[in-house]
Image (cartoon, rainbow, N blue to C red):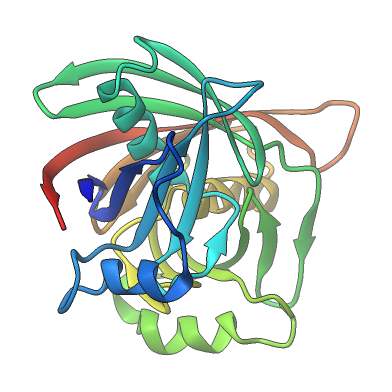
Amino acid sequence: MKFFKYQALGNDFILIDNRKNVFDAKPEYVSFLCNRRFGIGADGLMLVENCDDADFKMQFFNSDGSAATMCGNGSRCIVAFARKLGIFKDKVIFTSGAGKHSGIVLSENENTLEIKVKITDVNQIVCGNGYYFINTGVPHCVIFTDSINDVDINVEGKKWRHSPLFPEGANVNFVEICDNNRLKLATFERGVEGETLACGTGATAAAIAVSDKLQNGVKSYEIEAKGGEMKISFDTDKKQKKSFVNIWLQGAATLVFEGII
């Protein structure tokens, strides 16, 4: 089987062209391929599949083999991969478990593409005791901290990830506000069950949580994750309180290598 390895801000993924339905996505097989000791190694695995009402369909699996509806950094990687497959040139429409998305290639430098992807609208924000809960295609818990460096992400993240507040579990994002439109982010990801170097849908949830918390009117944020930087922009729906629309996630996606397993 031929595969391609992509990364977006250190979030790495196995990409497979499954338009001929050749891949059997059994959880144990996906988990094996994502294993860094015995398989290829990745935070997740994605399939490009045919779709009747879009250019392609995105199927996403966590490294433990479980299926997920959406992945922000992964979506940029799969857009880059679909372009490599010749599915589109500059603009694309694709579907995921979270709905329909737009993708735009902004620039290209060898194996790295700068891409922005439209994220699902957010129509509900839950502000709890010490946390925000926001679904950006994936459920996210957002925790504010004065210093990312003082938080043990794996220890604290695991506590929140398994909190009874979130019966289906949640990704956990620790956010440090640096200035008016710049944030630092560290994420404990459900399905990976540990800290990852970046999280696109987590960055989106963090930016929306900060906007709601500060009520500062800022609609564009630069997010610094441990794997690199990304940008989040959005509009607010004036008719519906706590509703965010036209959400875009922008950042790089890089082809690392390709091979046969």
